[in-house]
Every structure is written in structure tokens, then in C-alpha cells.
Amino acid sequence: MIVLFACIHNSGRSVAAQVLARHYGLDARSAGSEPGSGVNPAVAQVLAERGLPVEDHVPTLLTVDGVQEADVVVTMGCGETCPVFPGKRYEAWTVDDPKDLPLDVVRAIVDDIDARVRELVTRL
Image 1 (cartoon, rainbow, N blue to C red):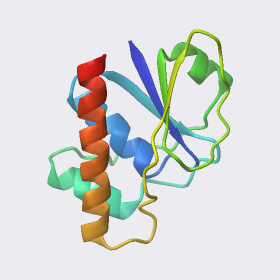
Image 2 (cartoon, rainbow, N blue to C red):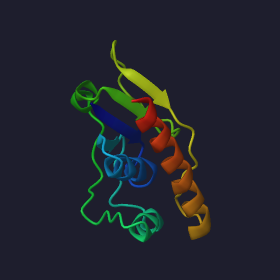
Image 3 (cartoon, rainbow, N blue to C red):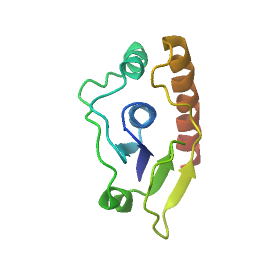
Image 4 (cartoon, rainbow, N blue to C red):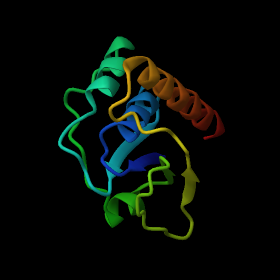
């Protein structure tokens, strides 16, 4: 089962969700409708603190093919445009954007994503 996490820049929320989902054993991917130039440094730091480095992540474009390959598509509450196909499971998670926020707030956002991912793993 493939889970795709999508947001606009694929540099914060969706990256954290992908990394955490993989950590919990899911085949997870992430993408963005307007990929950024790199991972949000605060998100990278919080994930590294958990032993989950993301130095090799490159923001990826959200494509029709990527959505078609996924069994579950999770949008991260950032207004992205995501193709909808019959038979796919879609979830919309409203998650604060960590861009330009203090590290303690980013930690709370990653904690929120972590809890949502663990709950998703349980349901799948």
C-alpha cells in the first residue's frame, strides 16, 4: 500500500509525514504542487533530533501519475490542487505550516503530524 502526502512546497509538512510514515513501516511518498528548493531547516532539525535525517530529500512535483500510483492520498491543509480518481482514499489533514515559525512551534507541528501518521498506520 502506497501513501502519498501532498502539500504546496513539499518542504515541511509532507516531508515530515513521509519520513514518519516510512519510520512506522509504510510505503510513503510526498510531493507538492509547487515544489520548493529544499527542506524547511526547522523541520529537518526536528526530524534529525528524532534520528530521522532528511538531507537527501528533494522536493518533488505532485503529478497525476504519482496520485494514480498511491492507494491513499493525504493532503496537508495547504490548498494544493490534487487530482481525484475514483477508488482512491483521500484524507485532508489541517496542519499548520511550519514556515518561518520558532523551533518549539515546529516541534509541536511535527508532534501533531506524528500522532496523525501513527493513527493512519493503525487504520491501514
